[in-house]
Amino acid sequence: MHHLDHLLAHYGYGLVGLVVMLESMGAPLPGESLLIGTALYCATTHRLDIGWVIVVAVIGAIMGDNFGYLIGRSVGFRVLARWGRHIGLTEDRLTLGRYLFRRHGGKVVFFGRFIAILRTFAALLAGANRMPWHSFLFWNALGGIGWAGGYSFAAYLLGNQVEKLSGPIGIGMGVLAVLIAVPTFVFLKKNERRLTEEAMKEAKAEKSGGRQKG
Image 1 (cartoon, helix red, strand yellow):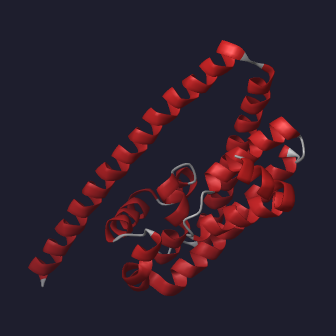
Image 2 (image 1 turned 120 degrees about the vertical axis):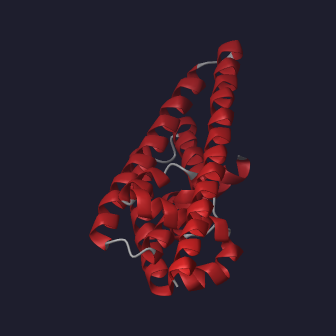
């Protein structure tokens, strides 16, 4: 936490916008953790304004996703399949992306903002899947505003409340937050595996059907 305080004291809003933008383009960076940490920093030190943190995070998220979309649309699935593993975009996740975009489209872009794996790769996959740009931009903007605004403001309010509390109550709130966060993380990971398995089955079925037709 001390290291984050040092970075925010020196680079402030620019650090938040840059990291969120790069993560949205597909770089494996802790954008969400930085956003929450910065909101808590705002609440406890008041050296940064939470309103500007939200603004730069939203702009960074939308810009990064649009850059990621353009990259995915330019390079296509063949390049992503060959080199994607170097940034964590495995073959299974590519298959999962195709499956989700074919079934749900814009909802993946919006809700993907709140899921770590999809947040990093949704824009690349949207471009590679040739999702219409105007549709992508709409859902991307909604997701960026909801994610950056919601997470930042919630963390900021929590930081304000915890700062006012001490002793057993403060510790109890911290324990409660952990008890909520851990099952949520496990649930998301289980659903990622389940969706991946479904996508792989569908992909194999499509391949088998193509061979039979051939």
